[in-house]
Image (cartoon, rainbow, N blue to C red; front, side, top):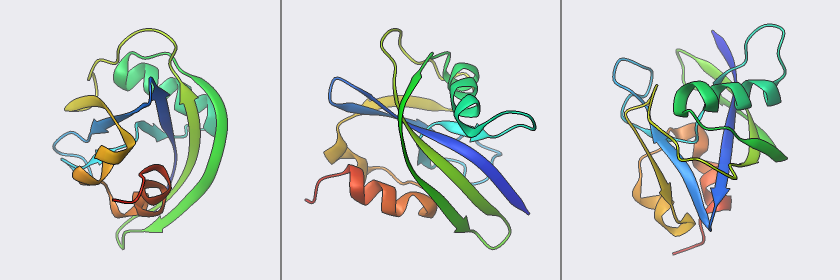
Length: 128
């Protein structure tokens, strides 16, 4: 099974937005960069904007694009398009996640992320 998703690295005031996956979902309890599945008929960029509105009630604007992550979990393969976004106004609310936080890049290593995010985390977080 392959899932195509889009995730956002949302920056504001030197911090990055992360969200904790809800119980009952694949990798529940892990922190992640918010986003979700690309629906039929939409682009990955449209999906990331929609998903942040649905999951966090946050309007974002895509300002750039990072790499595409291709990761095989064994039972599921994920292809994740990574977008750099800004959220000029409003605060996120955890609607479809357990929690969300703004964290400094150097704090990212303190949170458990899915293995697929390892290379992205190394680029975003300064060496300790």
